Length: 441
Ligand SMILES: Cc1ncc(COP(=O)(O)O)c(C=O)c1O
Image (cartoon, rainbow, N blue to C red; front, side, top):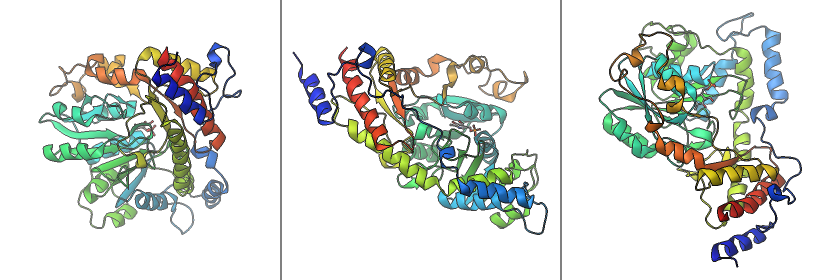
């Protein structure tokens, strides 16, 4: 006898053109797809004559360096990219750099983060976030994530000390972090907010691009991101001094004429910077890609929406928390399976249906990594772990029990802007077939 929940699941599935009572492929039934569905890298699927023309122009003019080159015209690819990127992200300034990691270093330098300072970051994020804080000589302090997989605003305040200088709000796997409460806490404690939008290029929060809400924002333009030249990054801000410090830091500590014109009246002098300058080949490709950003974002959003809509009525279904559903990038659709064991079964069954799912990906549970727990640095006197709370702070799984729980029980299907309607229907079909069976078991 079916109970009420199963009856509702079965009728909802039938209404959607699939059958929750159909035999699972993992148990010998026919799979939803013979050829497994696979999301591809987004940006390169959109490479065409536009990127080719940009690259050819750099080759033919022989001007691969952003500041000067052959002939009388100044190279303009990176400069134009910066101008258009700032306009797209609705910020006054944008700085192009060699990677998202370089962008983080520039942003932390702009915020004058250094030895003795603490920076709060989510326990689940990419290596670069932790590493760049350590490279700045500051101390990383972890906060838990919530069911959006982003930093939990409710876990930030207890992590603040008089040494806290910055909160890193990372927008992970296409979902904006809940910025309103984060910004409120930051203002209350006079702390700066750095938005890391590496995994959410093109997403919005409350109608404005991510990256434009905090004091400074960064993006990655590496292969796995929305638009790409293989590698690349950008920093945005509305603050002329933060921009000037980031620009100087990215180019040895001086300010080139073009950036001098951008800031108007320079307010800083030379200091010791590095070299994260973007070259004109990357600038050209990224310019062409940037002009396609809205096309890519609307396509992937539409596909994610199709999948959400196809699953919304499935009894008991709980999706990843979305602080702003309209602003989502739509990189993946995640479902709460309740327990780690059910999640494992869901992953196996979805794979057998030809619609592979995975646990949240593209980040690491940093406090649990051996080199993080042991605080390994290139020099034993590294200030991060020899000053302030550095010697006594303890990293490890005890820092993030909720993060471990959440990441263990959610699974999702990655989206692709080029998925067809049929692909999206297959995702819906597979979940409608597998989810009720897994939850019933
Ligand atoms: C959240 C986050 N921040 C920063 C980065 C660094 O970007 P890049 O790989 O371009 O250095 C990444 C890269 O994946 C990331 O996921």
